[in-house]
Image (cartoon, rainbow, N blue to C red; front, side, top):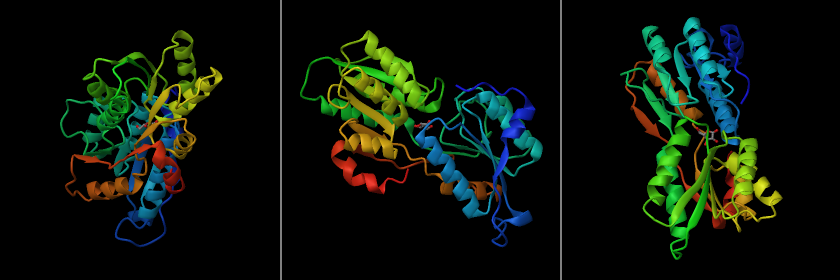
Length: 325
Ligand code: AHR
């Protein structure tokens, strides 16, 4: 991970007006002095999914005439907290963020509440006992994604009673997708005695993390049947290590991953990934719609889930030209 930026000044420097409001008109969201000012703290730029998510948010803000103050936390919770405090100081209209980890948000969320600034969570959830500290949470159902991965695997091996040894590449420790994707997957495979996770380690959702951890798995275990990667980037990194070890990804080791970025669809079309569970990052327009509603004081649902699919190798080639991220 990148070095922590520890001063408030550094955090403020990270907060840049990435997208200026569009010019003129449009009932308060059309730009100029009437534009809603949104402070958005992004996790980082760790994966293809994240890049697509950032682009979706920036484009959607521009289209909606929302002035976006965008901050990249470089996968550090302290940077996110500092960015949120900076947004509070600047008196933005709405704060949105995708929390890098689940816990440790109570104080800063209470500060936003005291300042009267509504907060929208996107992509990842927080764990809190406090009431009414955020308006809504827009994002995927990560537990369900893990279940979908587990269900496919169980069906794939339905005819075999032999042991199925699984290695797991986990996302960032403490993050909602890492916790939930493990939970959903484990829930399904634990119903079958012959499935076992033999090794599980944090690859931080990055290609280099996936490559390094998979190399370590392979050097200590010559009986790996399945790789379950919590995202595509880690799976793609792992494929490099599998090939370097003289094995065929997708053949010698069954590979399941989550997200559905173009590179993973290409790897599926090439026979190197067996299953991709989709996690849709293109939620910018939905987020801007919610920001507008929250700013206007309208009621919004507490939890809004994104619709997603599951893709196998048979579908990859046909689907590839239509992938939007
Ligand atoms: O929170 C969503 C996850 O974060 C995506 O699956 C992963 O690629 C990203 O880094």
